[in-house]
Amino acid sequence: PYEIFVEVETGQADGVELICTSYPNPVKNLLNLKVEDDHGRHLVYRLYDANGHLLISKKISGNVTTIPMESLAAGIYFLNVVRVGSVSSQPGQPESSQDVKTFKIIKN
Image (spheres, one colour):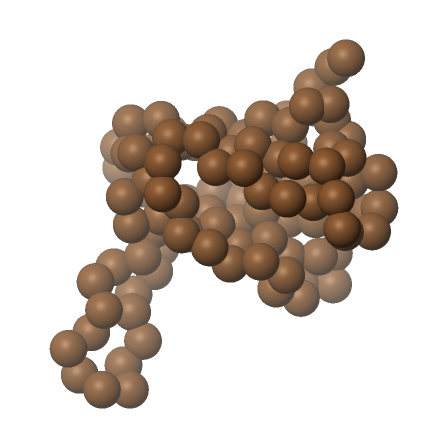
């Protein structure tokens, strides 16, 4: 087995180190997202297909998050990790978010 790491940094987020690990890569069933130093506080992952359609969006709740990919077709996906701010106290105002990292995921 081998690992392929392709990552694109989309901004500066102080104090967050993210590692994306998939076994094997290309991934078949489950993708593991490992978050170090931040313990997943206020982080959300969003999985997009190659056309930019949002497929999954969930809060990261621990150091290791398992993302199910077995039902997805073979292809290229993008895993975007964002830090979300507190919900605005004003109705209709979206919560703030900051891109942390985007990973290119290959599914076969």
